[in-house]
Amino acid sequence: MTVEILTIFPGMFESVLSASILGRAREQGLLEIQLTDIRPFSASKHKNTDDYPFGGGAGMVMMAQPIQDAMASARGRHPGARRIYLGPRGRKLTTALARELAREQELILLCGHYEGVDQRALDTCVDEEISIGDYILTGGELAAMVLTDCVARFIPGVLGSPESPEEESFSEGLLEYPQYTRPRDLNGQCVPEVLLNGDHAKIRAWRRRESLAATLRFRPDLLEQADLSPTDLKTLKELESTCSSEN
Image 1 (cartoon, rainbow, N blue to C red):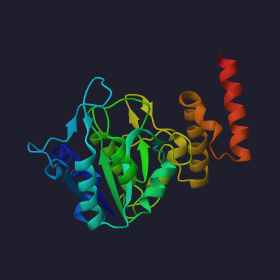
Image 2: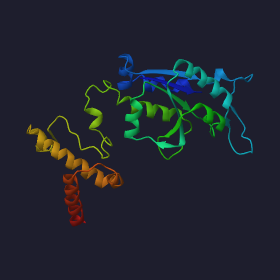
Image 3: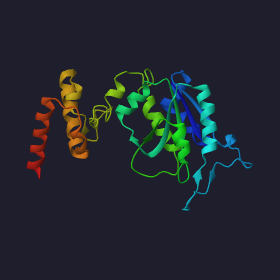
Image 4: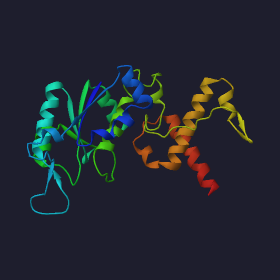
């Protein structure tokens, strides 16, 4: 997959996107990151990319012209790319959406800044808007990093094991079960015995129950849309009954 990122702060990206799993994915040719500075595309004398908003108001707005020209350049390299603006009005980034985006060959991400982007740039330059959450950032650069990281995990080969992204939090609408590693006994804190007996069926059942328990405790809202089996529903009733008796 190729991800081209249009930004006025390209220097923010390399330290994040060159480290750890993403760095290895780039080295292996599984993921290509291209950074395009919007500023050189500005037609103004001083190459500024922002101006005061019509109608008044606090702050500055990113100008349409530099974005339109930068996007045209990017589209010349990636004519079939899906064009995404990282903005608060977009649909929320989820595991399902990340899987969907990971099936694309090319993405172009537009990072906003200041008080927003001239609507004319959004009308002509992007296919959709995506939000990473209901909060405010100083710019779209951090959001672009989050989206790239999230999507990259579903590119075949990036995580090594094909099961890895499917066993993590939110992959099935639930939080992940507890994880343990060596030593077996840490100052009296012992690893659950079920994980040590080699019975994979029992391990899967334990993990599923613990995943349901964690979701019920920390994010019960997720259960409304999770894909739950009759066994899961029975387990939830047992967990809810246990919680009620403890209270």
